[in-house]
Image 1 (cartoon, rainbow, N blue to C red):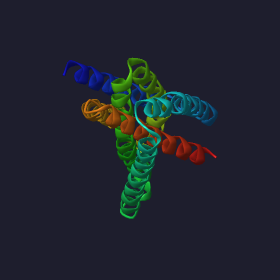
Image 2: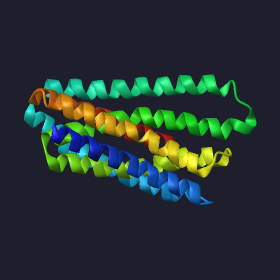
Image 3: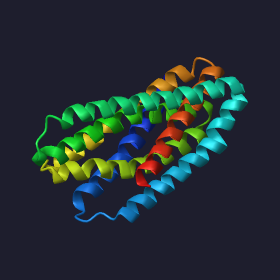
Length: 221
């Protein structure tokens, strides 16, 4: 039980820390360099890709077999596609009901909802990663934390420019990272069932992170 609590706290800390840093940057700076954001995002994506290729998938294959790894990856990709469609549908509904003056504010809120949903499988990766090894869990937590910085910035800027108070912007940014802790809790609990479950969770996280990385790259190209 203590290990589950520790894993949840670590997932919660790193999940909220990255988005909070990004939120603070988005709130206090007047001009935002696209090159800087692209560099941070590319660096974090490269780090996550290295973890996927050299840690997550090999660890899943060592624990279980190729079939479970493939199923986990496909489930992770499928879950992220579903989350994206859900957010896009919500955005279209909101977009038809808002005035031009509130477009930025509503966009920021919708982005925060989408990131909160996306943070759950990231937390699941941390939780299942700690189930495999402390090194893997910490590596995932750090990579996800770095990846959340530009996401926090992209969330804070439209809400700030839309007229929302800075304190409320930071509050919403922090709240969006809480789902990472929830995901870490779920990953720690179900990862303790068996080695095969850990392998599927690791593969699921790899698939989800692959989708997130590819979508971020496409959005910047």
